[in-house]
Amino acid sequence: MANQLLAGKRGVIFGALDDQSIAWHVAEVCAEMGAKFTLTNAPVALRFGQLQELGDRLGAEIIPADATSMEDLENLFQRSEEVLGGKIDFVLHAIGMSLNVRKKKTYTDLNHDWMLKTFDISAVSFHKMCQVLYNGDHMADWGSILGLTYIAAQRTFPDYSEMAESKALLESFARSFGYHFGEKNHVRVNTISQSPTMTTAGKGVKGFDEFFGYADKMSPLGNAPARDCATYCATLFSDLTRYVTMQNLFHDGGFSNMGMNPKLLEG
Ligand SMILES: NC(=O)c1ccc[n+]([C@@H]2O[C@H](COP(=O)([O-])OP(=O)(O)OC[C@H]3O[C@@H](n4cnc5c(N)ncnc54)[C@H](O)[C@@H]3O)[C@@H](O)[C@H]2O)c1
Image 1 (cartoon, rainbow, N blue to C red):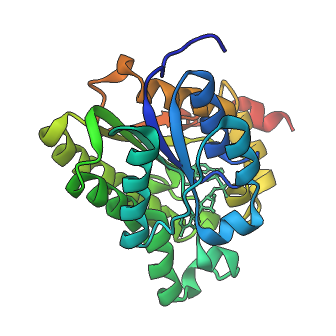
Image 2: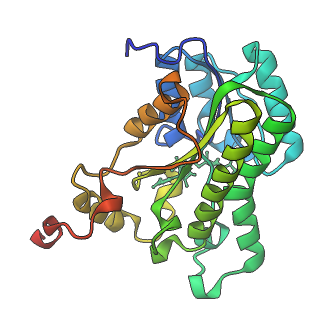
């Protein structure tokens, strides 16, 4: 891709686990568009995932961080500024994990200790990340912070379970921090609500294959692929969208505004 939309920008990308991860595609697109960035994931994911291969290929340093640890986050952003040679222009939070979904608990029989852990990993980590960026003064003026979310925050998708509340919390944190960061130094904070996508996190949800097909048929444009989510992220990291903030932006082929698509009855 010849477009150097992100030339000179410095970023931090969370959540690339393997080549299906949405964050993996974001990293590839940001590199193609001229950005420099560091990559981060939980230490355990670095052991089992393929992040090193991506970092080597794109020339990006990998800095391990458990996104629930303030200490890890402080180290991550300090080190990123050193490695990249200045303040950070963009951050992608692409983190989600539900203990109750993983352990196949039904919504009416959830373990609430696990639920709190799910919220911590999937939503409170966004607040922690923003707080460290804000208090450490790590963001460049007119920077951009993005989280990835799902429409289950607004509508009921029963098998998404406690991740629905995680996403509602995440979106609310983004709006609230969007105010504080906007006032501080014109940094924008948004969430992108993405179509179902075949990734490790996505496939962990019960009945995901059937649901993926349903959403694909319901959406006039079909489900949005991960690569297209990545190019949308890049526009929000760029200077072309400087006044977009505190928004939840649907990137879903039209799914969120559909009531019924006759295609679903065609079998
Ligand atoms: N796949 C979908 O259908 C879909 C749809 C809408 C939104 N999303 C969201 O997109 C984001 C990225 O997920 P994905 O689908 O690319 O799946 P993925 O499994 O590739 O990515 C999830 C990432 O979260 C990381 N993670 C988990 N616990 C962590 C911790 N404590 N600290 C740091 N990182 C941690 C994992 O290591 C992994 O890299 C998530 O927020 C997810 O909810 C996914």
